[in-house]
Length: 140
Image (cartoon, rainbow, N blue to C red; front, top):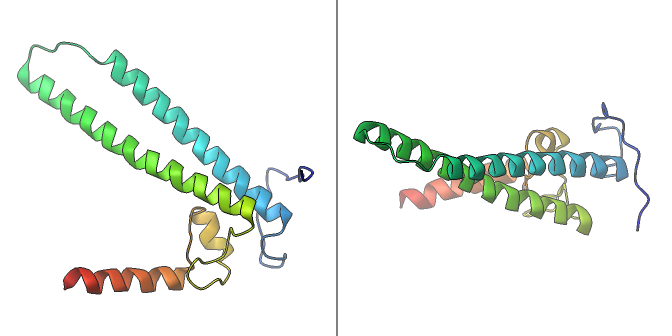
């Protein structure tokens, strides 16, 4: 088991460091873990709210409005559930030494992109190519 890497709270990965060194990996692991914990707490709050919110509303319009709100909340939570799976996948890639590298080209993903979207699996260029191909095939 590796020793824990000390990481100051104000640390930001820099281009002049070696790519995906221990500090950068620790930074992204912490970022991903904190994000996952926030999503899980939100999910727990939603479940509790839905359980508490089960009540009989006599007015049809009010009941329809509440059902719409509930459906929207559930759809949001489903997106977050999928996001948690992507976060888990990114954490696994960190453990396996594959994090930060484009799954299509094998090239490093820019630190700016990873900082903005830590679950990214492709470089910006590869992602743009992928989206253009999807658009072309969708239009067929």
